View (cartoon, rainbow, N blue to C red):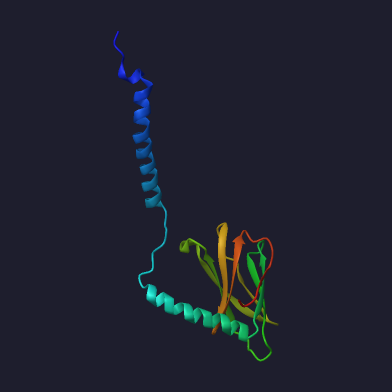
Length: 161
């Protein structure tokens, strides 16, 4: 009686390794096609120069004595900002609030917070995915920056770096 090849376990063991490599390759190609990994910056030198401007904005926030407290009203989808500064600094009429995802630029969101009076600002709370974000408050020549995890469960206090 002759042995039939497909009844031999060693043949299937030899077929298993190339077949698993083909399946893994198909999965990898599918992930590469269907995910957005963002673009790589073309001009690294220009971005390096912008870092100096960013550091100046951080120093300006410290010079103005800025401190921010953000409260998130999830139920009403509102953000409340209490912005404190030195008495000689005139607070701006609006503040830009930017949520930058740590790894995926496609999930970044920006809102403008309007001045209500008494160092208070308010604006809409954007829809954010779960993950790690940088929160940046900015106006005029300054910025405040802090890293957070979403979902946000409590208020946030930001001081200059």
